[in-house]
Image 1 (cartoon, rainbow, N blue to C red):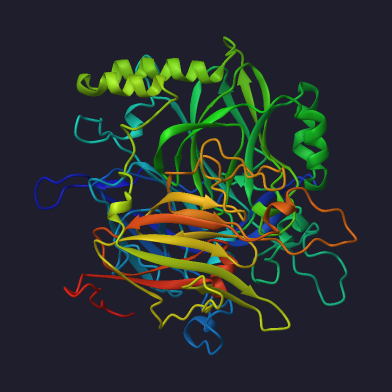
Image 2 (image 1 turned 180 degrees about the vertical axis):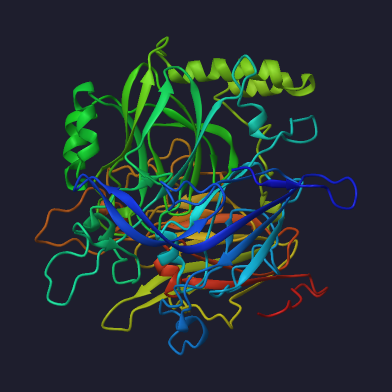
Length: 627
């Protein structure tokens, strides 16, 4: 949705004043369940705006803004009073306070303090609060999102559907001195707008409580029962697969998308789920099988795909990660989306017919479940016939070159066209310059870990990678990292138990290298993660890419001698991965957080407070206010 524009205040300004009200309330609705062929009744917390679709209430309204805008979002918490929000005496890292909330603009480069992107605030039931995001005029155009972020209830609320797309649209053309927005290039050869799809992937893990003594599974919702999400008991490895639920797209289960063969479409994909990996693939669907999609049980999805989604994978090109344009389009047939990721792709369906949109299997090393994940059908594309496209890569290059020759300024036109012809390079549209070795002023280390029984369960983060890491769970009264405005740090990220998506607020980072357990860099465009002869595609091609969320892979436990070794398990048995990234601390001071974006991990302590202060003139950072 486009927010309501208000009149300019105080004379001319860049951008527009935009305003949105969001009510937070319990909503009664229905979610289609392919396992039963009927709509399950649900009672879930939801964001409700003026453009919320009553038939799809469990996905928040999309927000569209432009660089330079001031965006005001008022949250009206209309949930019932929750005593654990005001009189809680338990441990801070035990999930609680399910009816209080706040708001995070995931990926936006804005202030983390005051009434801006401040996730340290708590908005209790009965309270209204207005956030104000002053989006700088030089903010990158791209795909971002927003979601609730109150420590202790984040996973429960996001899993209920409290998340939505936040699109920053740009019209800045590249010049000889400055880069432009990729939006200005993505036109048809006649100058018309390219078709775009904004796709919010959600994993709404509702269950139906059972009376004591009832042996039915909580995932088996009978007629007359109502699905809810009121406990963390049903979050954890394997629970999504066990639930039999389907990933929804824009609030719909197994949607059908209507396309035209040969059209270039921009797919803006947002993983707004809590924990499970999505690996996106397109394959041609047998026409005879189309009618059976609507009643496809999750348990039967893998067999259905094997028998009916039989075409070769359709190649497509990723042009941006986490809202930030790549230096070159990345040709692929598979994109791995971890929780919090965004991926912008240019997709062409080469001929008429139906296509499967597949969440294909993820290897054990790419999944927090530590087990290879089965395939799931996400939806179907129905492409009307047109002129067939025999070679998608050549066709895409020709069409973008034609668009560039029509729309790009004459001073940079030749460069843009030459780049496109040279492997679809996009160097005139990247939002940040590379971070050079000479810029680095400091080092940071981080490791994730989960303490498991017989020791008390704890979700922890360490500031060092030595033989004795200082693993600690989240403490809201502790600043874990003191950073300095204007500094440039090189971070080394590891995980000592299962994989975790690392997310840091405010400043994005650039990937320098990703070392597998043998010390081999697997982030290059030609790299193969092959220490066991297996390939996990999620790291290849990430060298030099800018992101704000990144999967930190870990070694797997020793194989069970009584079971066959899972495919690719040997890839990570010999050690752990080391991910090296760099980031600049620019413009904003104050406190914010970094955390694992498996949100039930974050709620249980896998988070740190970070403070960026002004230089103190003595080589350090001046203190900032403490929350």
